[in-house]
Amino acid sequence: EAMYLFICFYLLMSFFEEIHGFCPSQCTCVYHGRSDGTGTRSVLCNDPDMYEIPVNVPVDTVKLRIEKTVIRRIPTEAFYYLVDLKYLWVTYNCVANIDISSFYNLKQLHELRLDGNLLSTFPWESLAEMPNLRTLDLHNNKLTSIPADAGRFLRNLTYLDLSSNKLTTLPSDLMDIWPPFSGAIVSKNTDILVTQRVILGFQDNPWFCDCRISKLIEFSKIVDTSVVLLDPLVSCSGPESLAGILFQRAELEQCLKPSVMTSATKITSPLGSNVLLRCDATGYPTPQLTWSRSDNIPVNYTVIQETPGEGVRWSIMSLTGISYKDAGEYRCKAKNLAGMSEAAVTVTVVGVVTTTVSPQKFGRKPEAERQNTTQEESKQEPERTTTPLPITSTTTGEDTLLSAAGMAEQNVTVKNLRVISESEERVTLTWKTVNATGNSAVTVLYSKYGEKDMLPLSTDSNKNKVTIDGLQPSTQYMACVSPKGVPPTKEQCVVFSTDGLNDESSSEFSILIVGSSAACVVVLPLIFFLLYKVLKLHLKPKSAKEAELAKETYVQFETLSLKPRTLGAGDQLWARRYTDESERLLLCSRSSMDSQMTFKSEGSRSEYLC
Image (cartoon, rainbow, N blue to C red; front, side, top):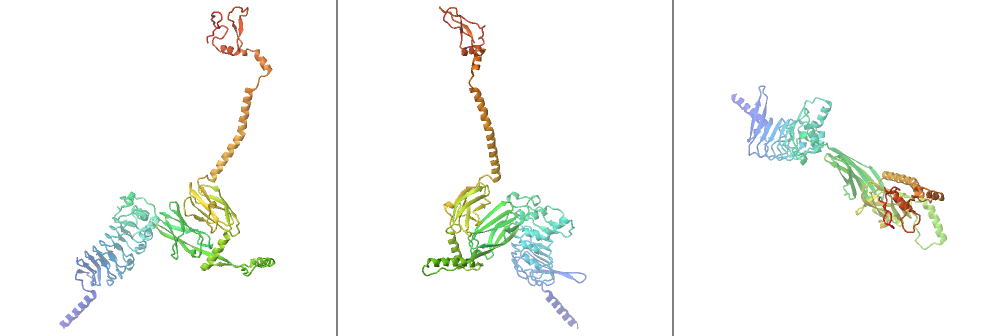
């Protein structure tokens, strides 16, 4: 009977050991029992010669530590039978590769530590197999980036250590959808008390400080939030202007994801016409625009792009002389650091087939017969039928229409092309068309002077005028207008420059000139009249009365002086002097009658000292 009990006990122990598995030869298994009969099992594997994950770990293991081995990869479903596992530490090994299904069936796992390995990438999708995971430690690896969609797998984490890697940035989308950042904003603005904190480790990474991590930098400056950094003294490694600057002192603008739209969503255009597709986008940094087709056919059209200001960009793609192969859906994609968005426009090409009575093939008809035929054809004219051709029309129909259009435009001539108004950013052209019909069309081309590629411009066939906008100031351009399908000649081109005055300045200048002209018309005659009066007064001859009065006045300054004594002079001792000499003597300080005179010998003149 004692032997029977011993055998039963042995078999029971063997069955128990078979269920729970044996401890691997290179590991140490420890069972932590409690007083109530329950307990937990932990396994430590740290043999330096271990090169693969052990497969015979006891199934009731709660904590598994694999440390300081030469294991290089974690295979698929390596721990699927460890349904009670809560703590998995694979630290300081040589693990460089982890499969997306390596952690399959670890529903109870709470803590995963993979620090001290050689991981350059991590399968973030594998976190979906661990719904109870709260701690993820990827410290001291070689991670270079984190994808934007990783945020939806990190929602349940309360501890994430990405320090000591090679991360330079974080996707903006990751910051927007990850609760530690998106939820912290709500708690800050609404003053909701957040009881659960998220601990993050970002230090010791070569961060490139631009708008992509602006939200992370802003959080590093906020105290008492739901996000706590393991090391708050995180610094920038680039760009050069911010190298060595702490996050807490860096000032960055936030990224803005591009917003893009097209000028139209559907465009229907006749065969052979010109179509312009425009796309506008906003975002920060300024997004880049690219055109593509939904059917992946290469886009080889002329594209113009311009950035009128920071954060704004537009693009115009020109489809000239479109055919059925140009029909389809075109996509404009806008991309910057914050993300990408796109908008689509559908182009439909239609054509027209005209059915008429075919001419006779045999001989010439008599004159009367031809007149009757002409009358019959004119009666049949309203019976012509026009049939729209869908995109699926054959190439033969397309060539026929193009040939007909070319014949119709052969006799049309464009003359007298000139510029009628000009400013810094726009110019208006006008011309005359000879032999034009109601359906005649012209092609307007323009470019900077000297450039070979000219841009087409759509215009109304019923108008002989077009305005070109969006030109650069102080730039020389060349524009040509020719019948559709006919290359322009030298006489059909004009060269102009955008350095003229604008309309408002020209108007003000014209008003100034008109005012100045009016003032001159009024003032100049008055000035001439005054000059005429002055000259007339100076040149007016003296009348006889005035002359007689002048003789009787002292104004003539006639003076008397003693004659020189000569023989035979008689009794006349006084002589008259000429008026000019008298006036000169009157102005002399000694020209009065009291002036001293010195008489010399006979025959000499008297001298006046002045």
